[in-house]
Image (cartoon, rainbow, N blue to C red; front, top):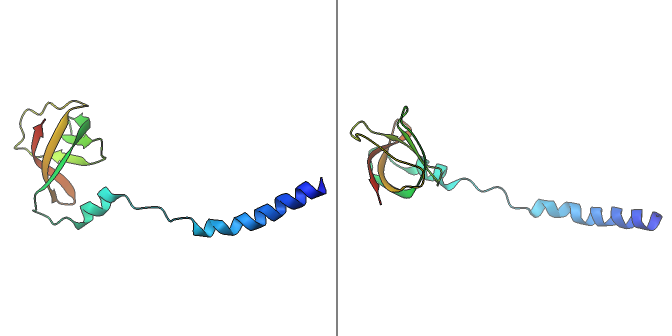
Amino acid sequence: MKKILLASAALMAAVAPLTAYAAPPKTHTAKAHAQTIKAGKNEFTTGVVAAYAADTRMLKLNTGGEFKLAPSITNPSYKAGDTVTVRWQMKDGSRLADEVKSK
């Protein structure tokens, strides 16, 4: 019993310092990208619709991107699973989509 306990303690003492070599968590690329985009510059994103909320006019893609639809987009009828290309730009800290094309 003492041999097992001593071996376990020695193993833990040897393995514990290895946690210092663990990689730090990576930042989410979509958030980092959104911070570097200049206001007024058109960007394009293609993805699959995860959800669309008609009351708030928010379109969410499976990549995690959320877009507020501009008033110029009339009669939006997006369903989960639709593949779309969104033309958008940063406005007041959020993504404003002024064109959404279904594929």
